[in-house]
Length: 384
Ligand SMILES: Cc1cc2nc3c(=O)[nH]c(=O)nc-3n(C[C@H](O)[C@H](O)[C@H](O)COP(=O)(O)O)c2cc1C
Image 1 (tube, rainbow, N blue to C red):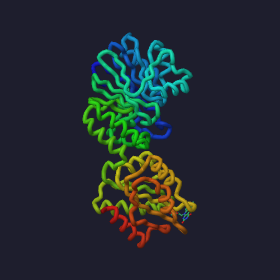
Image 2: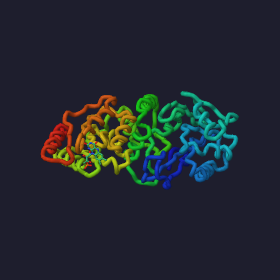
Image 3: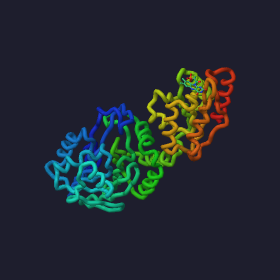
């Protein structure tokens, strides 16, 4: 992968992983990216996951061709990027570790050493000259850990963006960037929209030709498009018009009501109507769709006078991710005392700028003529 005449990719692809960060299914695998800047001085940008340090060190050694690295720049201390630090320092003990103060605290916690005899503690705006290349460090706290910084190389106009602009999926797999990047963003970074906005503001003052993230492909064309998506996502605005219908059903009657609603909406010509079975779809995909589109229908059975657990989990996930600026509708089912709509509303009531539609569909056990009319009225309201 060509990055520039003297910046080289030494990342790895992980096809063994089942759950990234212990919870996200990654059917296309994952990449852990690392880069080397070969100049008068040599800087290695981050390390890789523990399972791949040997492969990474071999790639590094091949790029170095007998030279020794001068700096190891650590932008983020999450172990999928930092696991190789101690082993690297054993192989290249004269290297200076360059990172933020909170990152060195974490190094001590992870490795029992904060490399205090051979380190450079950097702050926002500090620079590091390598020869032709000069690196400027930009603090990016809580995007998405507190110690994170990103790095700008003015020479090749490259932004090393840490986990920002990252994507699920190994680099040798075919997948549209938005598919892996949107789910990655909303699952992992999404709750820190304000911090991402701060970083985008800082980035807007830089001329950027390429973005080198710690996961996913190096971005080099249509950068405005990726930056604009990040602006939309981090300001919690819907990416496009559409309706996610998320349902939780035991015996299929609530599911049937959700499917009937989807059918009517599609017949009315509504595009992007997406049905999601909360019990059978990983919630990261449901979260992604809830943020992608402007309208969300929540359909749940009443369960022991509460909400079905999968719906409860989903709603708490939405709230935790600062869900806002959307239109919400409820469908509830109950055989004797349906209260799911009230319960769902109770969880979402503190979310900012949610518009609740007038029609709530209450089903008593199974869809009948009367409920059908209510579903039609809800479809009418949602199709406006
Ligand atoms: C374990 C269990 C607990 C339920 N608790 C309630 C309840 O507290 N109040 C109520 O009105 N219905 C309750 N129901 C009925 C459901 O809300 C719902 O009406 C029924 O499961 C049919 O919908 P479905 O086919 O989508 O599963 C319960 C159902 C189950 C399986």
